Length: 402
Image 1 (cartoon, rainbow, N blue to C red):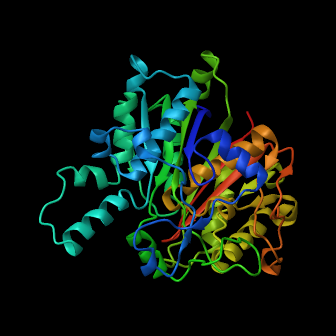
Image 2 (cartoon, rainbow, N blue to C red):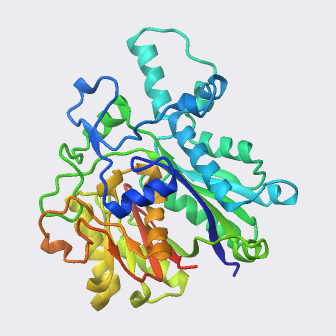
Image 3 (cartoon, rainbow, N blue to C red):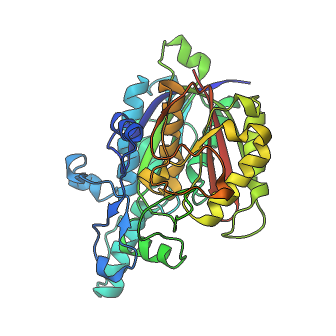
């Protein structure tokens, strides 16, 4: 089987506008959650979120581009540019036909939808911009990345709610393993922090008004965020021949479906995905040093996820560090798995485990090493990244130190 490595990474998220600043924030346990700054905030009951602050779209894109790029597409393009520059790849000649892009998103161009619904139904306008459809479609980010970087191989979008990024990266891994591509840009992007997006999530009654405190007994829900993470996945021999710096190896991936409930998580589904990723990577539970948890800060998710880890890891479970970086950057929905993969690279490459901040009081149903509040130095050879989405869609990625 062809092996796959990561040779480039890029991001823009509530913790930073690039990878370096994001990893620094994770090491420092910095919180990117704060008061929301969006229109019609007075009509919302949830008024906190993890926004990408200090972002000026006009500093990166001109007016014709902005007529085509929703905020989620902008985030994806900026992240992809950083990843490609780090990788050192140039997608020309034969490589352009052997390279593609798979991006995960849940809401797609939700800001564009929100703006135009308001224009038509509230302001009474009878016309919208002719590019509204190509701007709001879920495949827009993948399409524009392929256009920008001349990626003429497999290119598509994956949408599986909160597991979208992990599913997308799993498909990129499979394409390279199968010989259908030599390099793929992959990850996820989301920008749902608009009035309609937050109002819809309010209806689920899972949103916190105070902050995100995964695994803490006093937690009261999740906090929504926005942002993107894009990686260059590359066939290992291809990367080695050109002397590329390798960030980590993508060692395994597994998916499962709960087939049970549209919102309630299942321990069995999560456990099967965890076990499957380790089996695919050829590693045993005692090889795993870190798990980046789905860790939303809801009681149902946190307890179900911990139960699945205990089931799969058995006696080794208390020795595995498991943290939720959503406590810092919020839940980026379809983009969250991509930003969380950075925490796994941080553990593997730099030997630092990002903490679960906001942890105040232990929950006996989450009796694991949740790395509370302060980052930790550790020797990690294998890391797992969990994503367990509404609809019972589970996806777990295994990374190995390069």
